[in-house]
Length: 183
Ligand code: NI
Image 1 (cartoon, rainbow, N blue to C red):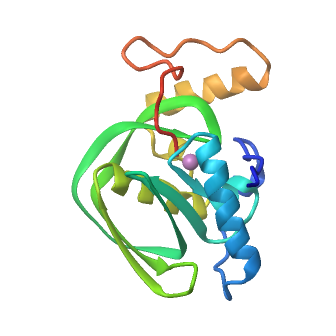
Image 2: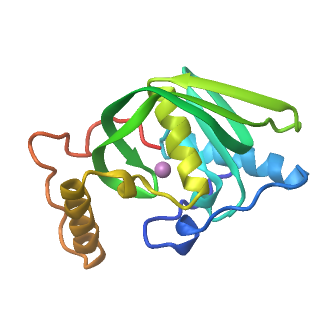
């Protein structure tokens, strides 16, 4: 079991567009295993390769007790209502805000053996798939916040970078100290 260091906000790798995996090698199988260990240890329910400093199109997630991985995922369709729900990111610890995501996501990619994988998720699984695919394009959930939430989140991150004590989250939202599922 190897726990990899998780890159956090400000690290340029989180803003890069990751490159496709051209040939799945042993190093990728090892990476996926380590990413699953790292995600579970964090703890979180989703982790994309750039979050551990690898700019390649791979992510892992855990849903209903089962961990999975996809390589070279592309979004085939986003359908259903747009749903606002709290989201957090292992690369932006302690920051949680509502993000609008499509109710259903269909993603195509391959599994670790290179076999085609078609994933369809609704609700929270759809949210995970959208959040992780975003990571591979250098997009963070902060980019998808309502303007007032984005301003507040960035102010918090700046304060944190200056070493100021963390402000409590507003009373209408949980304070980041509760058990929650982070992506
Ligand atoms: Ni994330």
